[in-house]
Amino acid sequence: MNELEITGRARTHIVALDSPRCALHYEVVAAFLAMRDAAALDGIDLQAASSFRDFDQQVAIWNAKWCGERPLLDRRGQPLDPASLPEAERVDAILCWSAVPGGSRHHWGSDIDVIDRAALGPGYKVQLVEQEYRPDGVFAGLTRWLDANMRRFGFFRPFREDRGGVSPEPWHLSYAPVSLPAIELLDLSVLRRAIEGSALACKAQVLSRLPEIYTRFVLAIDPP
Image: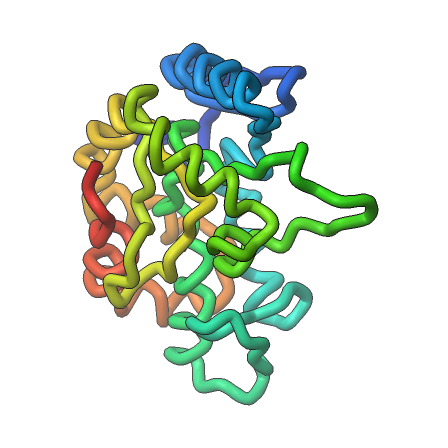
């Protein structure tokens, strides 16, 4: 991948699928479809709630959380009032659940947020919160299946444990053969160039803290 692809400012590495509807790196498609077929044999309808996300989409998410147009949550998933927080605390709260634009693993097309559509009851609205993936949650069966099977298809959970950066995300899978080389290409200078040219809310604060953000929220992952 080149610098524009790594930071989500190009999608020349991405293939759009109609069934299931998602967008993935071209090297990820076969592995994801094979895993989906295997899950179906065990009664699981594996779907991507989110897949490739470009730079502008990530900026829109960030800015909406900054100004309170989208929910802002603390590390425990409890709502926060953005207007009541100092700038630095507001940035930290966003980073717990949403990557800084240019630093999202979703830019690479290697990372997918997954659900089991077969487990959904009538009218159920997926929240993508940790409780849904616990042993008593709606996606408990999906969690068990992924624990037993995802590695043989090349996937792992980069945010399995709380490392003081991104909050645990049991729904977030990463395809190691693509994401491991990608994170090596995303160095601090590449990330800085992407952000400098953006319309990111609180850009000056983010740029002043970028080495910390890069280390704590981009590099600090659980290995395969």
